[in-house]
Length: 244
Image (cartoon, rainbow, N blue to C red; front, top):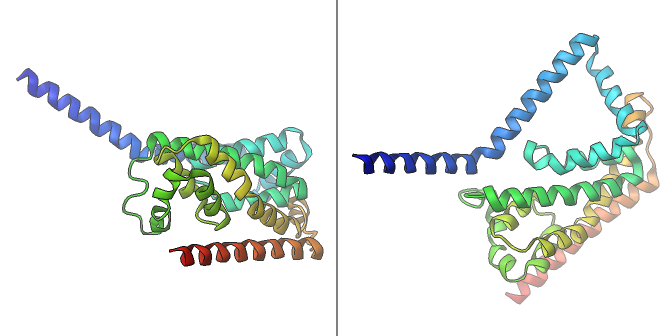
């Protein structure tokens, strides 16, 4: 009888552990957004703020305060835990800070990659299983184990899904040093192009104020860099196809 009780207790503990591994980050994200939305609702009502007023306060804090870039980097680093799209934050970096946003975004995106890598390493059970969109990631899993730096670098240059690469690297338990180095190098073209693309339309503060403008040189350079990155990815694909 006691053995059955012990066995049932162990089974329940394993089920709870498995549940936390599979849904821990989702529960954390749900808690974060609940607190954020609830806190905003209470604050806005208490101060009679409209959505536009609230947005202006956030823009002023991020662009006029020395803590603004720090706050942006921290949010970017925690982004995988709250399921916020990396592309949106990268574009915001251009809108908020202009060209200097490239530096803040590179720091934040690499911190974000390390956070997602850690989540994948310790809570990544099933991340690569049963998802059709991860087939392209699965194709690289063996190579990632055998040649981590070059494989992650290629995946970054190919613009493969950012977080899936992070989770896959953690799930496969590759060494974090080549992973973060390849991420830092391989993400530079995309980061520069997207930040400059957003920055070419002016800062977010100007857009909120209705002062819409376009910097044609910045826009052309950012689009050209995107085209170069796409061309490089196609070259790598053709080279891999010829080798196989």
